[in-house]
Amino acid sequence: MGDGDHGEQNKQDERAVSRRRWLRNLLPLAAEAVATVAEAGGEGPVRPPGALREPDFLALCTRCGDCADACPHGTVFTFNEDQGALGGTPVLFTTERPCRQCDGFPCAAACKTGALAMPRGRSVRLGSARIVEERCLPFSGPECGACAGLCPTDRALKLERGRPRIDQELCTGCGMCIVACPVAPSAIEALT
Image 1 (cartoon, helix red, strand yellow):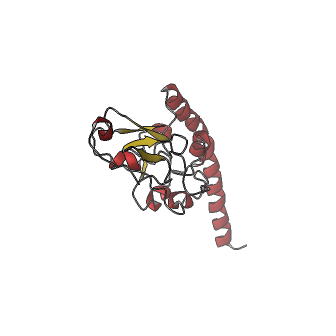
Image 2: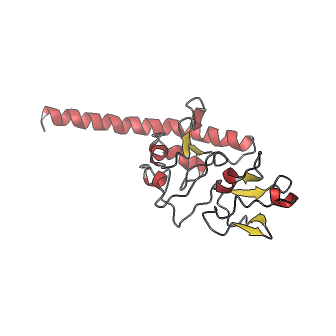
């Protein structure tokens, strides 16, 4: 082996040790982040399609940003670095920018560590939504239908006698209907 070969091998060994050290240090931070979310009564941030359970996701996510870069609709954001263990991890804000559940899930396909696994099927459950009847126009008289026909499952949101109804079992929580609602605040709320 030449001197150049030894130098390259040393660099590879250093990267492997550095990665192991990074993962070992990250696991307690991931546990802390999950505990903080649980204490606050939440289920955690909405992750891109294919995300593993939160502790596993945090342990595998390298904060590379590839999933955000791969999203053709700019739906995947990253937490700011000052967000502790969550800093740099991808997050969805479906009430502001809906997840379109793209063919081939480019966000998951871009993940090299397996923190985002390639989803099976055509849609992924990110949460769900509900109608707030007091704010929904068809419940007070005028017609609307702005949310109709947007559901990626084609079955979760239906109009019944001109009023929207969401089937909680079928809703993916993508946010398409929430963003389309012309009422402010939206007559459709995200549930996680």
